[in-house]
Amino acid sequence: EIVMTQSPATLSVSPGERATLSCRASQSVSSNLAWYQQKPGQAPRLLIYGASTRATGIPARFSGSGSGTEFTLTISSLQSEDFAVYYCQQYNNWPPRPYTFGQGTKLEIK
Amino acid sequence: QVQLVESGGGVVQPGGSLRLSCAASGFTFSSYGMHWVRQAPGKGLEWVAFIRYDGSNKYYADSVKGRFTISRDNSKNTLYLQMNSLRAEDTAVYYCAKDQAIVGATLLFDYWGQGTLVTVSS
Image 1 (cartoon, rainbow over the protein chains, first blue to last red):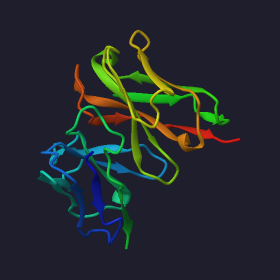
Image 2 (tube, rainbow over the protein chains, first blue to last red; image 1 turned 45 degrees about the horizontal axis):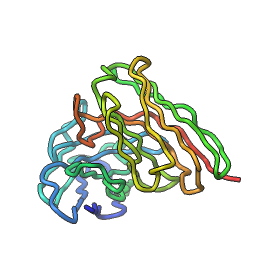
Image 3 (cartoon, each protein chain N blue to C red; image 1 turned 45 degrees about the vertical axis):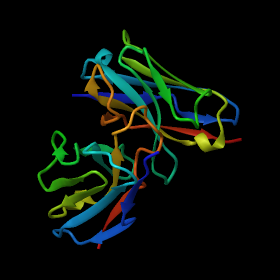
């Protein structure tokens, strides 16, 4: 079973600065990696899929990179609305397994 | 625009049953696979179940297999999750989520509902 590990667990960044979140897979998931944003009391929202393709309506300040086992989500200039929890998710394997998501990174205001 | 609206959550005793519904609109429901994903309080996301666009195949997490049943009514644009033999560890917000692939399955969730809270407690 593929295990997704995100780091750090919590990231403190000031508004306007760049944030870099990491996600590692225990084995290759090719480019079948997505990032989701979840704000308190809300459902997750798809940000990035295919490791680097922004979903519909996602601002250009969000970018994803990586392939295989190492992935990065970068937010170039943090806005107040970006402070949330971010999850990576692999969708390389079928049938689905419950632990397809990483444990999340909480992005908080410094 | 795509909308997914869950309902049916509530408080239930251990061993009890509950049926969740997810009303879909804004897309051709009968062409897409659908998932249930849950999130225990203060925890991460856990995939629960999937049903293909035509209901022909269903998949479950081991933790719910034999207790939960996913189904759909394409004539009503509605997804269901029948939950039986509920346990305290099933307490979570349950989200329905649309699979990105048309007439296929990718495990990529492009739209989510707002969630419905299920609490299993005596």
